[in-house]
Structure formats: structure tokens, C-alpha cells
Image (cartoon, helix red, strand yellow):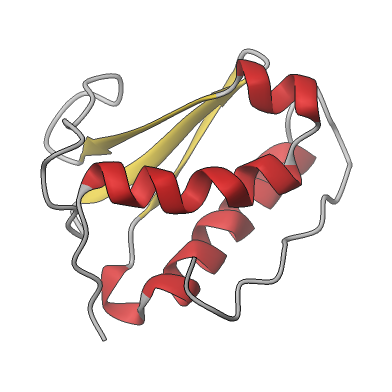
Length: 111
């Protein structure tokens, strides 16, 4: 089932996931945004635009940057799980948490 949501709704759904995966100081300093594949990574899509599969959710944590493409057709819990999996890999490969495997929170129900 394809998810229909705005960029703002997507960010609001993902922030609690990221908050559980990051330490409090990391989360407080983290930035999250969405960009389109046709634009520069740092050009943010406005919160009111409808999210589509040509977009990625990006983050910056402790000076390291990462992102995850949106898979909206999989439904919200599965999409959030895929983004969380990419965040988990990012954390394990980051300078601030090298080698740490942070658990992905349960996402069985819609956020």
C-alpha cells in the first residue's frame, strides 16, 4: 500500500525512531530533512510538499551526513524500518559511533 504523506508528516513520523536510536546529545544536535533526486542534497523540500519515491530523507549527526531513499509503496511501518536500517548502518560507520550497532525500535504499528 503506497503511503501518501507530506514531507512534514514523514519527518514527524521518523523523528521518534531516530530519537530512540541516537543518544540524547546526538539527537538534540541532529538535523533531518528531505531532498529530491533532481536537486542538490542540501536543497530541502518544503514540509508541505507530498513525499514521493524520488526523494530521500537525509540527516546530519555529529558532523557526519547520511540519507535513505523513500520506499513509499511498502507502507509506513516498512518504509520507516528501511530508513531506520539505513540510519543503523550510518551510525555504525560514523566517526561518532564507529562499530556500534544501535537497535532499531519496534515499528510494527503505524507511528
